[in-house]
Length: 264
Image (cartoon, rainbow, N blue to C red; front, side, top):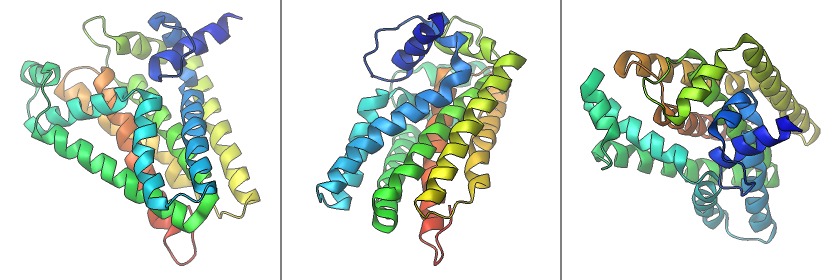
């Protein structure tokens, strides 16, 4: 089926899972299903970490290894975009000046600080989840990947198209379709609801509203800023939305599960 080939292309472009598809246009046609890619990323990462926890590996080591497996699965493409756009934000530039900062292959101080903070937050948050939830940490971790992927769609839907032929231009164009918006919303809600039900079955009290709202919040703010600062949303902005949502989601859940009566 053609839809399977397009999904394969989307997974191949956004991850390092070797499925063989490489067509940007085919991937863009099913970009509204990007929460599925997030779910797949979450399953691969969480399965690996679960095995380590089950084998009795120290949670600190597991949390540090999380950074490695995250980069392996995603190829670090979102983290690279996060770094680039962090430099743009730190420069306070707009228009052509901001674009020059964005296209500079060198990483500036703001990128280094932002990426370092992102990785530290990820390690600490995951350690808290493993310490409090034990093997149940899988549920909020997968949820964070789904939310991060959804934030990219939100940024694409609200963002202006690139004036040049970048990868995100096709994604942004296809995301404007109301049918794709409906399909994306349905896909995201179904996956999120499934995790809520699963969490209830294993004894996790779930307050899903904040987690569900994060992609909309981060994606909206990121696209608004990029539209004003650059005049468009590109792949770096999508990566920024992805990684910022990841940090926010893990931090939020870690704070909530650390409370006396854990709720996330």
